[in-house]
Each structure stands twice: as structure tokens, then as C-alpha cells.
Image (cartoon, rainbow, N blue to C red; front, top):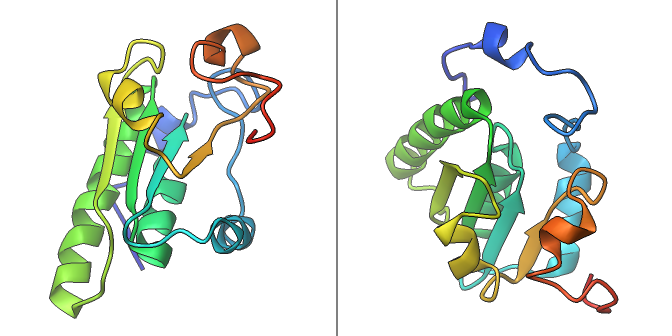
Length: 147
């Protein structure tokens, strides 16, 4: 079990299901999504609005793919960075394969990482209720069958 330093105070500042926070995906659902996506060690996973980085970590551990996440909020990214550091060291210690994991606190509309990874990503996760079409339209054709 991974147990980063608790930062409940900061994380509890969120108002549930607003533009700042929209809840966690169950690991069982993420598992099924990753299996259907057939990600491999050569794949790239991108999480827009990654929060505490749980899905970034799960994708990397489950598929050994390269996983990237971006979130505008500082508190969850701080937690994600702690978790990723611990996961990497534990995987190395236990000889458990995992892909590269990176998270950044950035506005996705201004993120160089997002601009670089979007065209290369094999799977992109984002909340379509939190991100208005105008926010994502520079990256996607919203009538695209790939969405």
C-alpha cells in the first residue's frame, strides 16, 4: 500500500463536483478502460485534470505505459508527486515494471507538456463536464469518432 504524507486539509478545500473537483474514478472502471484501450509499454496515456494522480499511477503500473497528468490545483499535484516518487522507488526495489509517470501543476490550455503529448497520446482521459468544448476545441474535432 502506498501512503503519502496526508494533506487532508488542502484536499478538503474542494467543493464536490465543481469545476475544481469532479470525483474519483473507481480503479475497477479504470482497469476495464485500460484493458479495452490495449495500452502497452510503447503507449502514452494522458490525464487532463489528473487530481492526485491515481489514474496516472494505475495506467503506468497496469500497462507499463508512459503516463502523464496535468492539473491546475496545487494540493492534489503535491500529493501526486509524493505518491509517484514512492511508487517509482518501490517498483525499482521490488523489480516491478512500470512506465514513466509525470504530473505537473499547469493550466492545460497553456501547458507545453499537453501540447507535446496530445498528438502522441494513445489514450486521453478528461471530464467532459468540467472542460468546456471551447477549452478542448483547439485540440480535437468535437464531432470526431475518436472521442
